[in-house]
Amino acid sequence: MGKNKKELLSLVACIALYAVVQSLIMLDVIGPFWELNLILICINVILAVSLNLINGFTGQFSIGHAGFMAVGAYLGAVLTVKLQLPFIVAILGGAAAAGFLGFVIGLPTLRLDGDYLAIATLGLGEIIRITILNIPYVGGASGFMGIPRFSNFTWVFFATVFTVFFIRNFINSTHGRACISIRENQIAAEAMGIDTTKYKVMAFTIGAAFAGIAGTLFSHYFYIAHPASFTFMKSFDILTIVVLGGLGSISGSITAAILLTFVSAALASYPEWRMIIYSLMLIILMLYRPQGLFGNKEISLKIFGRLMGGNKRGNTQGN
Amino acid sequence: MDFSITQQFLQQLINGVSLGSIYALIALGYTMVYGIIKLINFAHGDIYMVGAYVAFFATTTLKLSFFPALIMSMVVAAIVGMTIERLAYRPLRKAPRIAILITAIGVSLLLEYGGMLLVTPQPRTFPALFESQVYTFGNIVVNSQQVIILAISVVLMVILTFVVQRTKIGKAMRAVSFDTDAARLMGIDVDRVISMTFAIGSALAAAAGMLVGVYYNSIDPLMGIMPGLKAFVAAVLGGIGVIPGAMLGGIIMGVIEAMVSGFISSTFRDAAAFAILIIILLFKPSGLLGKNVREKV
Image (cartoon, rainbow over all chains, first blue to last red; front, side, top):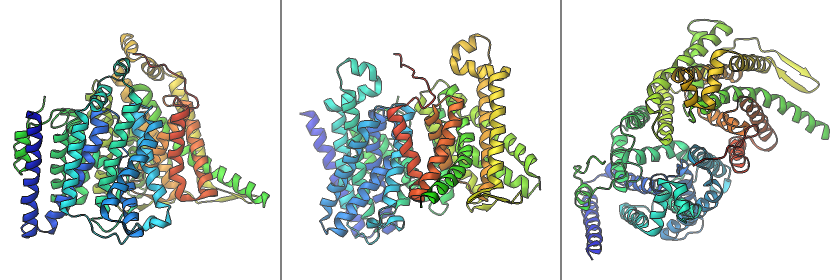
């Protein structure tokens, strides 16, 4: 009972947060610039949490997440622009396509481990991008233009809440435990009768599907889907968020997504410094705190609620 | 019709071999580092960029001729490589491998964007250091840059093979790569050997960078990303950790790429490299010349 109550409470907290932010947007207290950043935060949270499922919880090092995002972005745009379908269908379609691709790609490649998997996923992400670049139907190198702006704070926020709840519940389920056991020790997990391939592919597919959702939301906010938005630099961006927050910590990913989105917003006029700061952060983090800000700990609901309310006191030291 | 296809094939073969020898030079650094500390040194492609820029400034600002500039860029890149190893990778020797891999990605981004800040993102025109001569055999065209690239790559590879097979440091490198702990017990200074490996690998990458500058006449701070990834693919293709494998893999990679851009479409050139990677990883992960190693618990 206590668990359900907690669950309900966090849902109420999310809705309250939504109500506050949405009314601030309606009252024009939050202008277009900050609205853009709020939307970017949400999209980054979806991307980071879904990548964290693959990298942090299942321990499979994937750096091709931008490829799945691209699939969602383009397929969603095809559904709304070319086929005139409603936005929700586009989101689901983008998720399904990216998830399907994740499944097809994951099945053979997840047999690889460690750095080989990393480089294979990097390669696949690039193959996806180059393939899209060569399809004239979706605009080729000049990008898919004229996408209506269907994404707004409401859509993006609730997609984020859904993602976080889904992945958190997945991790706390039998399947999620199996994924964590693969991260801890694959051979031992196998000896315990866990079908490691099945769970690796499952985590990869779910992660890819949510990246697809993020992609659809992304292209329907910026009016355009461009191949250059989905290079492996984008994958590294997402990876930075996950690593900074802590591999295996959802609240870490959320905090890091908020933090880094603000950092890049603050550095908007010095774009050349952004990547330098990101890269130094990655190096210094690995040297002095390889487990990230939160390690694989989660912050408790109480602090979580306060954090979501905009109070950054949740920066507790994990471990 | 059939005749012209043969001709085009031969032409692309020549282009591919000269491009491939550049990949081979970069791939050697990847493969040597991987052989010793099992790290995919993502920053390696950027060392190649550093080499190209040092050569650029050596020839334009310092007005050096080809060979002094080549040596200067190799030396500077070797120092940069050793510094990176010392500052970023050595403290993580005992950390999980993923941590070192992320650090390598960080170093790579730092070199790329730090480079952009230092030398501006605009591409620069590499000065012509030779009078370009074009030799034609029938309808097949070979230019002097291609000859120089091939000649220098071969010389460097011969020197490398000599160093690895015949000298004391080479023997130490092979020992460390075979079994680090046993090598340490035999009194080999493992840290110094690793440092030397980075130096040699980086010097080769710098040479490749300068040759590319001479060949394409244009360099920019992000020039190392794609060749770096492709050279890594070449190293995997030949069998990572195996030195002749990197040379073979590099050449094959260059030829395939030239064929794809010659016969299919140049936009698919980059995809071809990654497709090769996936195929090789799935069917023969140890690479063409690699040995199968069983994983022990």
